[in-house]
Length: 398
Image 1 (cartoon, one colour):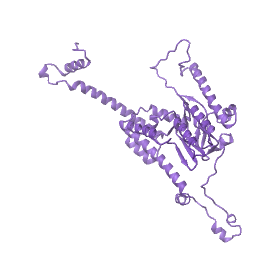
Image 2: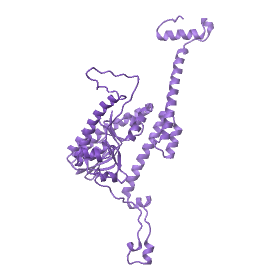
Image 3: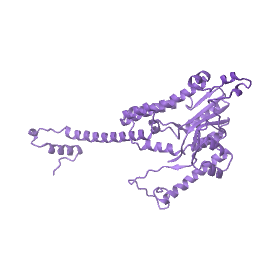
Image 4: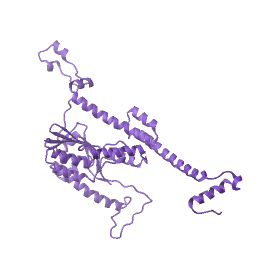
């Protein structure tokens, strides 16, 4: 599986996949309902319109199609197919004059990326990008759509590179035909790693070429100055030509001198001089639209955090851990919280296995008549005969 994604997010996905948590029947039904709702909705869910401007939101991990495990753990994700559908809808809407792509993504899977880049290039209406996080595959989308405006000085860009994920097991042995030794390279050997890296380099070359062409530079410049796989903040990214603009802060404390307020003022000017603070109530009164948008975004993120903890509590039985994490405002992937969840998940799995063994033993002994006076045999003999009958082997003779 090939990834164009930040390492931190890839580690989270791996931890989720390795957790061994099984979805409940209710969770599976909720997932099915979510998929049906997406399929039956009116237009792409990541597309909104404001006047003659269409906004396409690209948030979370980029995937070919929505992933159940990521949904189960409350992780944001955007399907490449949804991006393509949103571009097509906006481009064909006569009311839409321009498109803004809002990007907040660490990147994701390779499969689906290049088709999406082609869809962006084929879009006739002008596109601009506002990015809070545009890393790896998401940066390629932003670069091709461009120009790129950072949401703020803390916005992240880069992580340009390709990674492959392998799970090594002693229980699996791959054997290839004589003339195809590189069909199943062994990632535990240097020769196998060399074969895999050669393929990754080919994908990397296509990836960087798309970025270089869109940014008006060459591949050597992208490889040497665009971070070499590192993530950069907006200021540094702009210095290196990766970003076009960074907005200046609009909400800030201002302290002016008396002369600046009123050059002719003396005592009155000193009285006017004060620090202007923008608190929530002032923001609500002076900028109701900004306050509403900020509140809605905050509520949505908090809802996802709480739902993620509740899903983990339902799957692992770690109700106390979930409630404490919710109350203390901790993330689902806080190291201590994650360790507690995994511990409970393993304990629950062990308990389920013991219960299964116990149920099996009960099925064996359930039909045994424990009264020796009726058969003249002790319980051990009866259990052996019961096992033999269940397996279809007839009577067992020691």
